[in-house]
Length: 187
Image (cartoon, rainbow, N blue to C red; front, side, top):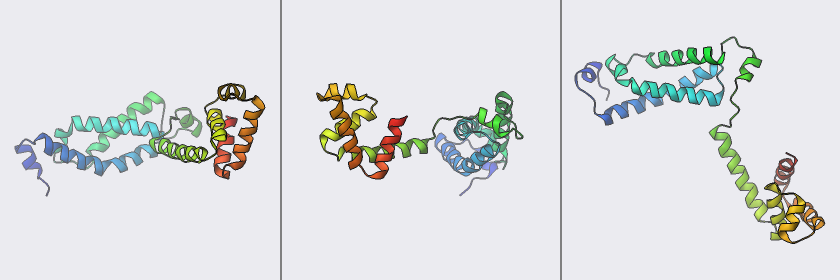
């Protein structure tokens, strides 16, 4: 049941009603606003920051939106103003070359990337822990960045034994885990 603009203007909203209306507003506008900013060539992580800031502005000015009768393109105005400001500040323009866009790209991993990486590491760690303990210890220490000399010292074995255990562990690991460990060690 939707309130008319006249009802909203004549009777002040409680904080809870205002929050409920803003939550609905947020759900309705988030996806299309995100797409709009991405189409304007903002980097994905930067887009989330810009969008968050725009919704903070919208929350601060939300009474204006309600008293104006909930204009359809009100939030688009906030987005465009913020986009123009950042475009001038970051030298991002709609006709920017891919090199210009790449120069302004935000390379931080997104939340989805971090979650997938944590899930992948969890699976690999569980697989490594399933190895016999004397192999698993060498692999874990190696993945933490220790050299074979330090691993040998920590485990009380020779450097050759540490290298041998690592090779044996790699043979025992499943192919995807083995390639992950090998790629990780090459970095």
